[in-house]
Amino acid sequence: MTEFHISTVLLKTGFLHLTLGHVIMWLIAAAFIYLAIKKDFEPLLLIPIGFSIFVVNFPLAPLVEKGQLFYLFYHYGLEWEVIPPLIFLGIGALTDFGPMIANPKTLLLGAAAQFGVYITFFGAILLGFNLKEAASIGIIGGADGPTCIYLTTKLAPHLLGANAIAAYSYMAMVPLIQPPIMKLLTTKEERKIRMKQLRPVSKLEKILFPLVGTIVIVLIVPEAAPLMAMFFIGNLFRECGVVERLLKTSQNELLNIVTIFLGLAVGSTMIADKFLKPEPIFIFFLGLVAFSFSTAGGILLAKFMNLFLKEKINPLIGSAGVSAVPMAARVTQKLGQQEDPKNYLLMHAMGPNVAGVIGTVTAAGMFLALLR
Amino acid sequence: MEQWIPALKVAFFGLSGVFAGLILLMWAVKLTSFVLRVFTKKTEGKIGK
Image (cartoon, rainbow over all chains, first blue to last red; front, side, top):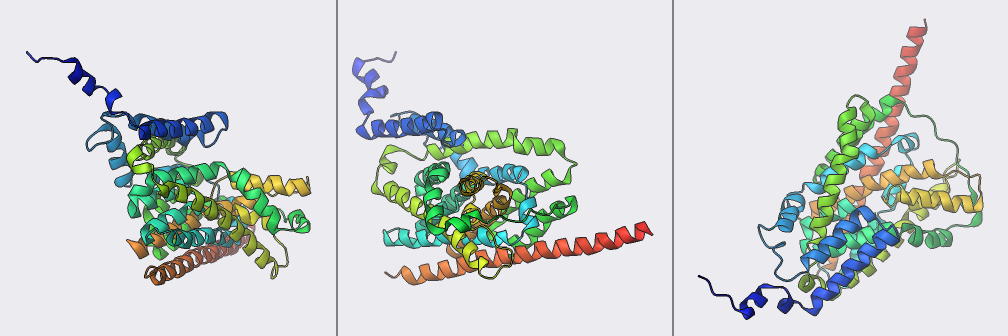
């Protein structure tokens, strides 16, 4: 019969293996859970991420080594490229491209809002990151969580936790980060510009858009196909009107299920000895730079376009080119109404907002094509 | 320092790709809307007669 000594039993518990790093990670996890519950910062993501960070930082817990539960979520969900494209299916099913089809010029604003991605790319290189790491950090500026995770998993998987947390934290802070930049770069008169009501978009145009979009984007950036294909399939479910069950599943159950696994998989990468280094602090700083320059890029291009346009666009809608949908568009609406309460910019801002999603995926695809 | 030249190339081609993609998409959307408008008008006219 096996003999049990108090010392061997104690060694099998976590107490004797607990380190200060573990406790710091618990505090970080608690901070994310607090922000999610108390401040409503992206709770659907930060709750699973926060709890995952908490639980994987228990000594001896069989969770993150090869073959263990959270490792399997990470391996099959992210390394196998399953979760981010499935999230895109849901986003596509929820997205109305009508405002963008009615005013296709707004696609340019979605492209301009990727400036921050490239400025941050250089900033990251300046801070000592290599090209692949810098690309994965730069894409935070696109304000698109699944794309950031997708690209980071492929180019710099060791930065996944920090990048994902930075992306989702800043997305939640869009209403705090964007308004000062928007006010700084626009005059009162510009913020008061009223835009012509958008034309109605026919059902056929909306049905054809996912097909046209796939042809253009996947031909130019084939590397973006996994995300773009799922995005546009989801959108076709929405617009075709004959697959109600698939649409509802994509928008609700499937999206919710993959969101749980995404959060758990991302959080499981944040283990004390890997995470408690200077890099995550740099990444948080660079993420803020990325968001700020992306916001500025969209606004400045809108102002530039106004030099040539007969019907001026309100430059505030340029800030919605970061793809945090629909929060960035709501911020535009709010700021516009501060100057003119009868100015309704929300639908105008939805154009660059959804264009920003396509822009970020295209930027990620270009990084993959050039760096992988 | 040797990272800077490839970095500049990546940024140049990357940003060009993004703009090329979205500008082409803009024109594709405009073209689709135009073709549909012409087609639907013609159809409507014939049905009306």
